[in-house]
Image 1: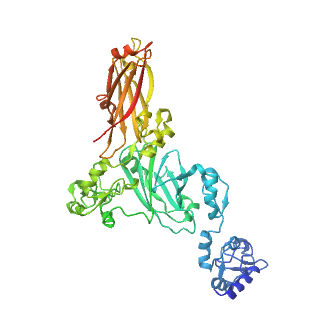
Image 2: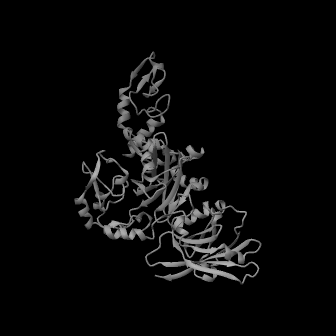
Image 3: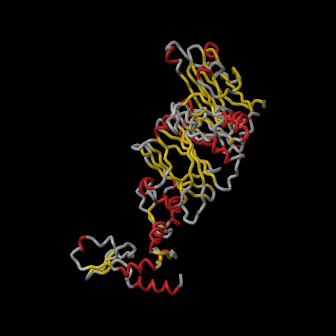
Length: 523
Protein backbone atom coordinates (compact mmCIF):
# COMPACT_ATOMS: atom_id res chain seq x y z
CA UNK A 1 0.00 0.00 0.00
CA UNK A 2 1.31 3.50 -0.94
CA UNK A 3 2.30 5.75 1.93
CA UNK A 4 -0.09 8.46 0.64
CA UNK A 5 -3.09 6.13 0.99
CA UNK A 6 -2.02 5.25 4.53
CA UNK A 7 -1.81 8.94 5.34
CA UNK A 8 -5.38 9.52 4.09
CA UNK A 9 -6.65 6.58 6.15
CA UNK A 10 -4.83 7.87 9.24
CA UNK A 11 -6.41 11.28 8.76
CA UNK A 12 -9.91 9.76 8.58
CA UNK A 13 -9.19 7.67 11.67
CA UNK A 14 -8.02 10.70 13.66
CA UNK A 15 -11.27 12.50 12.85
CA UNK A 16 -13.30 9.45 13.92
CA UNK A 17 -15.10 9.43 10.58
CA UNK A 18 -14.66 5.66 10.26
CA UNK A 19 -15.65 4.82 13.84
CA UNK A 20 -18.99 4.01 15.47
CA UNK A 21 -20.27 6.99 17.47
CA UNK A 22 -21.09 4.79 20.48
CA UNK A 23 -18.59 1.90 20.77
CA UNK A 24 -15.76 3.77 18.96
CA UNK A 25 -14.84 0.65 16.98
CA UNK A 26 -14.27 0.70 13.22
CA UNK A 27 -17.45 0.47 11.19
CA UNK A 28 -16.52 -2.91 9.76
CA UNK A 29 -19.97 -4.53 10.08
CA UNK A 30 -22.95 -3.58 7.95
CA UNK A 31 -25.38 -1.93 7.77
CA UNK A 32 -23.89 1.39 8.86
CA UNK A 33 -26.75 3.61 10.01
CA UNK A 34 -26.50 7.43 10.14
CA UNK A 35 -28.72 8.54 13.06
CA UNK A 36 -29.76 12.17 13.52
CA UNK A 37 -27.99 13.93 16.41
CA UNK A 38 -25.95 10.75 17.12
CA UNK A 39 -23.77 9.91 14.11
CA UNK A 40 -22.81 6.73 12.29
CA UNK A 41 -23.58 3.54 14.19
CA UNK A 42 -22.36 -0.01 13.60
CA UNK A 43 -24.82 -2.87 13.24
CA UNK A 44 -24.27 -3.87 16.86
CA UNK A 45 -25.00 -0.49 18.42
CA UNK A 46 -27.94 0.32 16.18
CA UNK A 47 -30.85 -1.29 18.07
CA UNK A 48 -34.50 -0.75 19.01
CA UNK A 49 -33.60 2.38 20.97
CA UNK A 50 -33.13 4.23 17.70
CA UNK A 51 -36.19 2.97 15.82
CA UNK A 52 -38.05 6.27 16.42
CA UNK A 53 -35.03 8.38 15.41
CA UNK A 54 -34.46 9.80 11.97
CA UNK A 55 -31.86 7.57 10.31
CA UNK A 56 -30.63 6.41 6.94
CA UNK A 57 -28.29 3.68 5.79
CA UNK A 58 -24.95 5.25 4.95
CA UNK A 59 -24.13 3.14 1.87
CA UNK A 60 -21.44 5.57 0.71
CA UNK A 61 -19.53 5.15 3.97
CA UNK A 62 -20.05 1.37 3.81
CA UNK A 63 -18.39 1.28 0.40
CA UNK A 64 -15.54 3.47 1.58
CA UNK A 65 -14.98 1.28 4.66
CA UNK A 66 -14.76 -1.89 2.54
CA UNK A 67 -12.36 -0.22 0.07
CA UNK A 68 -9.74 0.98 2.56
CA UNK A 69 -7.10 -0.98 4.43
CA UNK A 70 -6.56 -0.33 8.12
CA UNK A 71 -3.81 -0.63 10.69
CA UNK A 72 -4.11 -3.17 13.48
CA UNK A 73 -5.63 -1.63 16.61
CA UNK A 74 -2.58 -2.86 18.52
CA UNK A 75 -0.34 -0.54 16.50
CA UNK A 76 0.65 1.32 19.67
CA UNK A 77 1.98 -1.97 21.04
CA UNK A 78 4.28 -2.38 18.03
CA UNK A 79 2.17 -4.11 15.35
CA UNK A 80 2.75 -2.76 11.80
CA UNK A 81 0.11 -4.88 10.09
CA UNK A 82 -2.38 -3.31 7.64
CA UNK A 83 -5.22 -5.19 5.96
CA UNK A 84 -8.68 -4.78 4.50
CA UNK A 85 -11.74 -4.83 6.72
CA UNK A 86 -12.56 -8.45 5.84
CA UNK A 87 -9.20 -9.73 7.17
CA UNK A 88 -8.55 -7.26 9.97
CA UNK A 89 -10.73 -8.91 12.63
CA UNK A 90 -9.04 -12.29 12.13
CA UNK A 91 -5.62 -10.70 12.40
CA UNK A 92 -6.47 -8.75 15.54
CA UNK A 93 -7.89 -11.87 17.20
CA UNK A 94 -4.52 -13.60 16.79
CA UNK A 95 -2.18 -10.59 16.86
CA UNK A 96 0.97 -11.30 18.87
CA UNK A 97 0.92 -7.71 20.14
CA UNK A 98 -2.47 -8.23 21.73
CA UNK A 99 -2.25 -8.66 25.49
CA UNK A 100 -3.69 -11.96 26.70
CA UNK A 101 -4.56 -13.45 30.05
CA UNK A 102 -2.38 -16.23 31.50
CA UNK A 103 -3.80 -19.67 30.59
CA UNK A 104 -3.37 -20.67 34.26
CA UNK A 105 -6.16 -18.24 35.19
CA UNK A 106 -8.76 -21.00 34.88
CA UNK A 107 -6.85 -23.20 37.37
CA UNK A 108 -5.03 -20.87 39.79
CA UNK A 109 -6.93 -17.59 39.14
CA UNK A 110 -3.65 -16.03 37.99
CA UNK A 111 -4.28 -12.34 37.21
CA UNK A 112 -1.30 -11.82 34.88
CA UNK A 113 -2.05 -10.32 31.48
CA UNK A 114 0.58 -9.47 28.90
CA UNK A 115 2.03 -10.12 25.48
CA UNK A 116 2.71 -13.69 24.30
CA UNK A 117 6.44 -12.87 24.02
CA UNK A 118 6.44 -12.28 27.79
CA UNK A 119 4.40 -15.37 28.66
CA UNK A 120 7.25 -17.90 29.00
CA UNK A 121 9.14 -15.73 31.47
CA UNK A 122 6.00 -15.22 33.52
CA UNK A 123 5.20 -18.95 33.59
CA UNK A 124 8.72 -19.95 34.63
CA UNK A 125 8.76 -17.37 37.43
CA UNK A 126 5.23 -17.81 38.77
CA UNK A 127 4.21 -21.37 37.86
CA UNK A 128 7.49 -23.27 38.11
CA UNK A 129 5.80 -26.29 39.70
CA UNK A 130 3.90 -26.80 36.43
CA UNK A 131 7.06 -26.92 34.25
CA UNK A 132 8.22 -30.27 32.85
CA UNK A 133 11.86 -30.38 31.73
CA UNK A 134 12.49 -33.43 29.57
CA UNK A 135 15.10 -34.96 27.28
CA UNK A 136 15.10 -37.29 24.28
CA UNK A 137 11.66 -35.94 23.30
CA UNK A 138 9.98 -38.12 25.94
CA UNK A 139 8.13 -37.35 29.17
CA UNK A 140 5.59 -39.01 31.49
CA UNK A 141 2.52 -37.39 33.00
CA UNK A 142 0.21 -39.09 35.50
CA UNK A 143 -3.31 -37.74 36.00
CA UNK A 144 -6.13 -38.87 38.27
CA UNK A 145 -9.86 -38.42 37.99
CA UNK A 146 -9.54 -35.74 40.66
CA UNK A 147 -7.53 -33.62 38.19
CA UNK A 148 -10.29 -32.02 36.14
CA UNK A 149 -7.85 -29.84 34.20
CA UNK A 150 -4.13 -29.17 34.12
CA UNK A 151 -1.65 -27.07 32.18
CA UNK A 152 2.06 -27.86 31.82
CA UNK A 153 4.90 -25.95 30.17
CA UNK A 154 7.10 -28.45 28.31
CA UNK A 155 10.77 -27.47 27.98
CA UNK A 156 13.28 -29.44 25.91
CA UNK A 157 16.45 -27.58 24.85
CA UNK A 158 15.21 -24.82 22.51
CA UNK A 159 11.69 -26.25 22.21
CA UNK A 160 9.02 -24.79 24.49
CA UNK A 161 5.47 -26.09 24.22
CA UNK A 162 2.29 -25.84 26.29
CA UNK A 163 0.15 -28.85 27.19
CA UNK A 164 -3.49 -28.39 28.15
CA UNK A 165 -5.33 -31.49 29.38
CA UNK A 166 -8.83 -31.89 30.73
CA UNK A 167 -10.99 -34.76 31.97
CA UNK A 168 -14.60 -34.31 30.93
CA UNK A 169 -16.24 -36.96 33.10
CA UNK A 170 -19.74 -35.94 32.02
CA UNK A 171 -18.88 -36.68 28.39
CA UNK A 172 -16.50 -39.56 29.25
CA UNK A 173 -13.68 -37.86 27.35
CA UNK A 174 -10.03 -37.07 27.97
CA UNK A 175 -9.19 -33.93 25.97
CA UNK A 176 -5.80 -32.38 25.35
CA UNK A 177 -3.77 -30.23 22.95
CA UNK A 178 -0.07 -29.39 22.67
CA UNK A 179 0.66 -25.95 21.27
CA UNK A 180 3.53 -23.59 20.58
CA UNK A 181 3.99 -20.63 22.90
CA UNK A 182 5.96 -18.49 20.46
CA UNK A 183 4.06 -16.58 17.78
CA UNK A 184 7.07 -16.55 15.47
CA UNK A 185 7.62 -20.32 15.80
CA UNK A 186 6.17 -22.01 12.73
CA UNK A 187 7.52 -25.46 13.59
CA UNK A 188 4.93 -28.17 13.15
CA UNK A 189 6.00 -30.94 15.49
CA UNK A 190 4.28 -34.30 15.49
CA UNK A 191 3.72 -36.13 18.75
CA UNK A 192 2.22 -39.36 19.99
CA UNK A 193 0.76 -40.29 23.37
CA UNK A 194 0.43 -43.71 24.96
CA UNK A 195 -2.32 -43.88 27.57
CA UNK A 196 -1.76 -46.64 30.15
CA UNK A 197 -3.54 -47.97 33.21
CA UNK A 198 -3.04 -51.08 35.34
CA UNK A 199 -2.40 -53.52 32.49
CA UNK A 200 0.34 -53.89 29.89
CA UNK A 201 -2.08 -52.70 27.20
CA UNK A 202 -2.29 -49.09 26.06
CA UNK A 203 -4.18 -46.81 23.73
CA UNK A 204 -2.08 -44.63 21.44
CA UNK A 205 -3.04 -41.31 19.88
CA UNK A 206 -1.17 -39.11 17.44
CA UNK A 207 -1.51 -35.44 16.58
CA UNK A 208 0.37 -32.26 15.66
CA UNK A 209 1.48 -29.33 17.76
CA UNK A 210 -0.92 -26.45 17.04
CA UNK A 211 -0.12 -22.73 16.90
CA UNK A 212 0.20 -20.44 19.90
CA UNK A 213 -3.35 -19.05 19.72
CA UNK A 214 -4.72 -22.24 21.25
CA UNK A 215 -2.70 -21.59 24.42
CA UNK A 216 -5.22 -18.90 25.38
CA UNK A 217 -8.43 -20.68 24.38
CA UNK A 218 -10.68 -23.01 26.31
CA UNK A 219 -10.25 -26.67 25.37
CA UNK A 220 -13.93 -26.89 24.51
CA UNK A 221 -13.33 -24.27 21.79
CA UNK A 222 -10.33 -26.11 20.31
CA UNK A 223 -10.06 -29.04 17.97
CA UNK A 224 -8.52 -31.02 20.82
CA UNK A 225 -7.49 -34.67 20.74
CA UNK A 226 -10.26 -36.74 22.32
CA UNK A 227 -9.83 -40.11 24.04
CA UNK A 228 -12.91 -42.10 25.02
CA UNK A 229 -12.74 -42.90 28.75
CA UNK A 230 -15.03 -45.92 28.43
CA UNK A 231 -12.69 -47.57 25.92
CA UNK A 232 -9.70 -46.52 28.00
CA UNK A 233 -11.10 -48.16 31.14
CA UNK A 234 -11.87 -51.39 29.31
CA UNK A 235 -8.66 -51.64 27.30
CA UNK A 236 -5.97 -50.58 29.78
CA UNK A 237 -7.78 -51.32 33.07
CA UNK A 238 -7.86 -47.73 34.33
CA UNK A 239 -9.03 -47.25 37.91
CA UNK A 240 -8.24 -43.75 39.17
CA UNK A 241 -4.95 -42.94 37.45
CA UNK A 242 -3.95 -42.64 33.81
CA UNK A 243 -0.27 -42.66 32.81
CA UNK A 244 0.33 -40.62 29.66
CA UNK A 245 3.64 -41.12 27.82
CA UNK A 246 4.33 -38.25 25.41
CA UNK A 247 6.79 -38.52 22.53
CA UNK A 248 7.56 -35.30 20.63
CA UNK A 249 8.87 -35.87 17.10
CA UNK A 250 10.74 -32.96 15.54
CA UNK A 251 11.75 -32.71 11.92
CA UNK A 252 15.38 -33.33 12.80
CA UNK A 253 14.45 -36.63 14.50
CA UNK A 254 15.97 -39.42 12.34
CA UNK A 255 13.69 -42.01 10.79
CA UNK A 256 14.56 -45.28 12.51
CA UNK A 257 12.92 -47.67 10.15
CA UNK A 258 12.40 -48.41 6.45
CA UNK A 259 9.04 -48.22 4.77
CA UNK A 260 7.51 -45.61 7.09
CA UNK A 261 4.73 -44.85 4.63
CA UNK A 262 3.95 -48.52 4.13
CA UNK A 263 3.72 -49.12 7.88
CA UNK A 264 0.62 -46.95 8.20
CA UNK A 265 -1.39 -49.76 6.56
CA UNK A 266 -0.35 -52.12 9.36
CA UNK A 267 -1.60 -49.90 12.19
CA UNK A 268 -4.18 -51.58 14.41
CA UNK A 269 -7.33 -49.39 14.60
CA UNK A 270 -7.65 -50.04 18.35
CA UNK A 271 -4.21 -49.92 20.01
CA UNK A 272 -2.41 -48.08 17.13
CA UNK A 273 0.49 -50.56 17.29
CA UNK A 274 1.79 -52.13 14.10
CA UNK A 275 0.15 -55.48 13.38
CA UNK A 276 2.32 -58.58 13.03
CA UNK A 277 1.17 -62.09 12.10
CA UNK A 278 -1.32 -63.45 12.92
CA UNK A 279 -3.54 -60.62 11.62
CA UNK A 280 -7.30 -61.18 11.81
CA UNK A 281 -10.15 -59.50 9.95
CA UNK A 282 -13.87 -59.05 10.45
CA UNK A 283 -16.59 -60.17 8.02
CA UNK A 284 -16.29 -56.85 6.20
CA UNK A 285 -12.53 -57.12 5.79
CA UNK A 286 -11.24 -54.71 8.48
CA UNK A 287 -8.03 -55.94 10.10
CA UNK A 288 -7.10 -56.06 13.78
CA UNK A 289 -4.05 -57.21 15.70
CA UNK A 290 -3.81 -60.49 17.59
CA UNK A 291 -3.65 -58.68 20.95
CA UNK A 292 -6.84 -56.65 20.54
CA UNK A 293 -9.02 -59.30 18.89
CA UNK A 294 -9.68 -61.39 22.06
CA UNK A 295 -10.89 -58.29 23.89
CA UNK A 296 -13.50 -57.28 21.28
CA UNK A 297 -16.68 -59.00 20.19
CA UNK A 298 -17.33 -56.72 17.21
CA UNK A 299 -15.23 -54.78 14.75
CA UNK A 300 -14.58 -51.22 16.05
CA UNK A 301 -14.83 -49.87 12.49
CA UNK A 302 -18.09 -51.39 11.19
CA UNK A 303 -19.45 -53.39 14.17
CA UNK A 304 -19.39 -56.62 12.14
CA UNK A 305 -18.66 -59.87 13.97
CA UNK A 306 -15.17 -61.35 14.26
CA UNK A 307 -14.45 -64.93 13.33
CA UNK A 308 -11.14 -66.70 12.92
CA UNK A 309 -10.55 -65.32 9.42
CA UNK A 310 -6.92 -64.34 8.82
CA UNK A 311 -5.75 -61.59 6.50
CA UNK A 312 -3.09 -63.66 4.75
CA UNK A 313 -2.44 -61.02 2.10
CA UNK A 314 -1.48 -58.44 4.70
CA UNK A 315 0.50 -61.02 6.65
CA UNK A 316 2.48 -61.85 3.49
CA UNK A 317 3.45 -58.21 3.05
CA UNK A 318 4.97 -58.06 6.54
CA UNK A 319 8.00 -60.04 5.33
CA UNK A 320 9.17 -57.02 3.36
CA UNK A 321 8.62 -54.47 6.13
CA UNK A 322 11.05 -53.39 8.85
CA UNK A 323 9.17 -52.85 12.10
CA UNK A 324 10.31 -50.27 14.64
CA UNK A 325 10.82 -51.55 18.15
CA UNK A 326 7.66 -51.16 20.25
CA UNK A 327 9.78 -49.01 22.57
CA UNK A 328 11.01 -46.54 19.94
CA UNK A 329 9.08 -43.83 21.80
CA UNK A 330 11.43 -44.51 24.71
CA UNK A 331 14.58 -44.14 22.60
CA UNK A 332 15.20 -47.52 20.90
CA UNK A 333 16.50 -47.05 17.35
CA UNK A 334 16.24 -50.65 16.11
CA UNK A 335 14.03 -51.78 13.23
CA UNK A 336 13.87 -55.45 12.26
CA UNK A 337 11.69 -58.07 10.59
CA UNK A 338 8.50 -59.12 12.43
CA UNK A 339 10.11 -62.27 13.90
CA UNK A 340 13.38 -60.57 14.91
CA UNK A 341 11.71 -57.48 16.38
CA UNK A 342 9.53 -59.65 18.63
CA UNK A 343 12.64 -61.38 19.98
CA UNK A 344 14.38 -58.06 20.50
CA UNK A 345 11.41 -56.48 22.30
CA UNK A 346 11.54 -59.21 24.95
CA UNK A 347 15.00 -57.99 26.06
CA UNK A 348 14.96 -54.37 24.84
CA UNK A 349 16.84 -52.15 27.33
CA UNK A 350 14.33 -49.36 26.71
CA UNK A 351 11.35 -51.48 27.73
CA UNK A 352 9.49 -49.78 30.59
CA UNK A 353 8.58 -51.71 33.68
CA UNK A 354 6.34 -51.31 36.67
CA UNK A 355 7.18 -49.83 40.04
CA UNK A 356 8.49 -52.66 42.27
CA UNK A 357 6.27 -51.62 45.18
CA UNK A 358 3.06 -53.68 45.51
CA UNK A 359 -0.23 -52.00 44.55
CA UNK A 360 1.59 -49.15 42.74
CA UNK A 361 0.66 -48.82 39.06
CA UNK A 362 3.43 -46.43 38.01
CA UNK A 363 5.48 -47.58 35.01
CA UNK A 364 8.42 -46.13 33.13
CA UNK A 365 12.06 -46.52 32.21
CA UNK A 366 14.71 -47.05 34.87
CA UNK A 367 15.43 -43.36 35.46
CA UNK A 368 11.74 -42.58 35.74
CA UNK A 369 11.19 -45.42 38.23
CA UNK A 370 14.18 -44.39 40.36
CA UNK A 371 12.90 -40.83 40.62
CA UNK A 372 9.42 -42.15 41.36
CA UNK A 373 10.76 -44.39 44.16
CA UNK A 374 12.50 -41.46 45.84
CA UNK A 375 9.44 -39.23 45.46
CA UNK A 376 6.70 -41.65 46.53
CA UNK A 377 8.34 -44.60 48.33
CA UNK A 378 11.31 -42.99 50.06
CA UNK A 379 10.67 -44.89 53.30
CA UNK A 380 11.39 -48.17 51.51
CA UNK A 381 14.51 -47.08 49.58
CA UNK A 382 17.56 -48.26 51.51
CA UNK A 383 20.45 -46.86 49.53
CA UNK A 384 21.26 -44.95 46.40
CA UNK A 385 24.89 -45.68 45.67
CA UNK A 386 27.05 -42.71 44.72
CA UNK A 387 28.84 -42.62 41.39
CA UNK A 388 32.15 -43.18 43.14
CA UNK A 389 30.90 -46.34 44.82
CA UNK A 390 29.27 -47.98 41.84
CA UNK A 391 32.37 -49.83 40.68
CA UNK A 392 33.73 -50.99 44.01
CA UNK A 393 32.29 -53.98 45.83
CA UNK A 394 34.05 -52.87 48.98
CA UNK A 395 31.90 -49.78 49.17
CA UNK A 396 28.66 -51.68 48.68
CA UNK A 397 27.93 -52.72 52.22
CA UNK A 398 24.24 -53.47 51.75
CA UNK A 399 22.17 -52.94 54.85
CA UNK A 400 21.87 -54.40 58.34
CA UNK A 401 18.70 -54.98 60.33
CA UNK A 402 17.40 -56.93 63.32
CA UNK A 403 14.15 -58.70 64.08
CA UNK A 404 12.62 -60.76 66.88
CA UNK A 405 12.69 -64.48 66.34
CA UNK A 406 9.42 -66.42 66.52
CA UNK A 407 8.35 -67.61 69.97
CA UNK A 408 5.38 -69.43 71.46
CA UNK A 409 3.48 -66.16 71.93
CA UNK A 410 3.06 -65.70 68.17
CA UNK A 411 0.22 -67.49 66.49
CA UNK A 412 1.04 -69.29 63.26
CA UNK A 413 -1.56 -67.31 61.34
CA UNK A 414 -0.13 -63.93 62.28
CA UNK A 415 3.56 -64.81 62.01
CA UNK A 416 3.24 -66.27 58.51
CA UNK A 417 2.23 -62.83 57.25
CA UNK A 418 5.26 -60.90 58.50
CA UNK A 419 6.72 -59.68 55.20
CA UNK A 420 9.33 -56.99 54.85
CA UNK A 421 10.16 -55.37 51.49
CA UNK A 422 12.93 -52.91 50.74
CA UNK A 423 14.37 -51.33 47.58
CA UNK A 424 18.14 -51.20 47.06
CA UNK A 425 19.68 -49.21 44.18
CA UNK A 426 23.13 -50.60 43.42
CA UNK A 427 25.37 -51.02 40.35
CA UNK A 428 22.92 -48.93 38.27
CA UNK A 429 20.15 -51.50 38.90
CA UNK A 430 17.09 -51.67 41.11
CA UNK A 431 16.78 -54.61 43.50
CA UNK A 432 13.75 -55.60 45.51
CA UNK A 433 14.71 -57.31 48.75
CA UNK A 434 12.08 -59.38 50.56
CA UNK A 435 12.27 -61.03 53.95
CA UNK A 436 9.53 -63.41 55.11
CA UNK A 437 9.42 -64.73 58.66
CA UNK A 438 7.48 -67.85 59.62
CA UNK A 439 7.20 -70.02 62.71
CA UNK A 440 9.75 -72.53 61.45
CA UNK A 441 11.80 -70.64 58.88
CA UNK A 442 13.06 -67.19 57.90
CA UNK A 443 13.52 -66.56 54.18
CA UNK A 444 15.29 -63.90 52.12
CA UNK A 445 15.10 -63.23 48.37
CA UNK A 446 16.41 -60.58 45.96
CA UNK A 447 14.93 -59.72 42.57
CA UNK A 448 16.49 -57.65 39.79
CA UNK A 449 13.83 -55.21 38.58
CA UNK A 450 13.69 -54.30 34.90
CA UNK A 451 15.04 -55.73 31.68
CA UNK A 452 18.73 -56.24 31.15
CA UNK A 453 20.58 -56.80 27.88
CA UNK A 454 21.22 -60.28 26.48
CA UNK A 455 24.89 -60.11 27.57
CA UNK A 456 24.08 -59.21 31.12
CA UNK A 457 25.75 -59.14 34.48
CA UNK A 458 24.48 -61.73 36.90
CA UNK A 459 24.08 -60.50 40.45
CA UNK A 460 24.25 -62.48 43.66
CA UNK A 461 22.86 -61.60 47.05
CA UNK A 462 24.45 -62.51 50.33
CA UNK A 463 22.66 -62.95 53.66
CA UNK A 464 24.86 -62.96 56.78
CA UNK A 465 23.42 -63.91 60.18
CA UNK A 466 25.47 -62.12 62.84
CA UNK A 467 25.93 -63.16 66.46
CA UNK A 468 25.43 -59.90 68.37
CA UNK A 469 27.55 -61.20 71.25
CA UNK A 470 30.44 -62.21 68.97
CA UNK A 471 30.19 -60.22 65.67
CA UNK A 472 32.98 -62.29 64.11
CA UNK A 473 30.69 -65.33 64.29
CA UNK A 474 28.56 -65.39 61.17
CA UNK A 475 26.38 -67.73 59.16
CA UNK A 476 26.60 -66.77 55.47
CA UNK A 477 24.56 -67.94 52.48
CA UNK A 478 24.81 -66.68 48.86
CA UNK A 479 22.55 -67.20 45.84
CA UNK A 480 21.83 -65.64 42.46
CA UNK A 481 19.36 -62.74 42.29
CA UNK A 482 16.08 -63.69 40.65
CA UNK A 483 14.08 -62.07 37.91
CA UNK A 484 10.92 -60.31 39.03
CA UNK A 485 8.27 -62.90 39.92
CA UNK A 486 5.14 -63.50 42.04
CA UNK A 487 5.61 -63.93 45.77
CA UNK A 488 4.53 -67.60 45.76
CA UNK A 489 7.25 -68.51 43.25
CA UNK A 490 9.81 -66.23 44.87
CA UNK A 491 10.02 -68.19 48.12
CA UNK A 492 10.49 -71.49 46.30
CA UNK A 493 13.94 -70.26 45.19
CA UNK A 494 15.16 -68.23 48.13
CA UNK A 495 17.72 -68.41 50.93
CA UNK A 496 16.14 -70.13 53.92
CA UNK A 497 17.35 -70.53 57.52
CA UNK A 498 15.54 -72.74 60.07
CA UNK A 499 14.62 -70.83 63.21
CA UNK A 500 16.30 -73.58 65.26
CA UNK A 501 19.65 -72.54 63.73
CA UNK A 502 18.94 -68.80 63.96
CA UNK A 503 18.25 -69.15 67.68
CA UNK A 504 21.93 -70.03 68.21
CA UNK A 505 22.84 -66.56 66.86
CA UNK A 506 20.13 -64.64 68.70
CA UNK A 507 20.52 -62.45 71.76
CA UNK A 508 17.50 -61.83 73.96
CA UNK A 509 15.36 -63.17 71.14
CA UNK A 510 16.77 -60.70 68.57
CA UNK A 511 18.52 -61.79 65.37
CA UNK A 512 20.78 -59.47 63.36
CA UNK A 513 21.43 -59.94 59.66
CA UNK A 514 23.25 -58.19 56.82
CA UNK A 515 21.92 -58.15 53.24
CA UNK A 516 24.38 -57.38 50.42
CA UNK A 517 24.32 -57.35 46.60
CA UNK A 518 27.46 -58.41 44.71
CA UNK A 519 28.44 -58.63 41.08
CA UNK A 520 28.45 -62.05 39.51
CA UNK A 521 29.96 -63.07 36.18
CA UNK A 522 29.07 -62.31 32.59
CA UNK A 523 27.19 -65.01 30.73
